[in-house]
Image 1 (cartoon, one colour):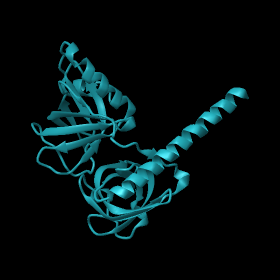
Image 2 (cartoon, rainbow, N blue to C red):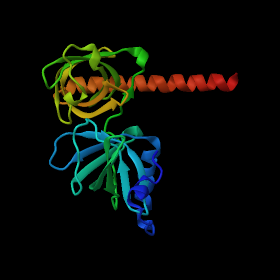
Image 3 (tube, one colour):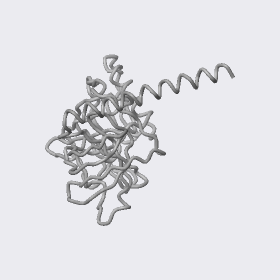
Length: 259
């Protein structure tokens, strides 16, 4: 996105590449190319920020990341950061780094980080998450950490958690996306799925914000107090629907092959 931005800022010659960083660099470069969201936690700060990788340079052993969202926080050189990249299939890449430099670009802070020596590739989620089409319109309701009532549409569901599309501009006094932080509790979460009525609390695990519409957010949350019986019923319903989808997909492919 910003070609050789770090070199232009410093004007330093590139160092010889370290082949030991290839594995790390390839994973980070793929996340940069896919524009995967980068979850950022500053040591000593409980807020979970989001950013994206703008540039990765194995020769300089650096990453350039965009400003942190929610905005307002300005990191300082020397601060340690914990980062994670969520990938398809529920995998997560985790690593630690340090802020080396802070610059301004288009009047917003951007950060040069030290490229980690290694990364930790997390395992898939313990529970399969079933995607839910936009046309299904499965409603959910919950009370946010500040006490306001919210309405959302389910985007995926598992026996351990959900993702909800929440439109803040539909709510009175709904505030902004920074109302929701990692580990916040969503009270009185209610939704119906495949004949199962779910009522429980949930803990926020991720908040994704559309940079072009800050009133539109995707909240990922983990169930806190879902009774084991309801959890098993929900899991069976999800697996049944997934099997039905696979059968329909197989039948469709067979029809296309015969056409």
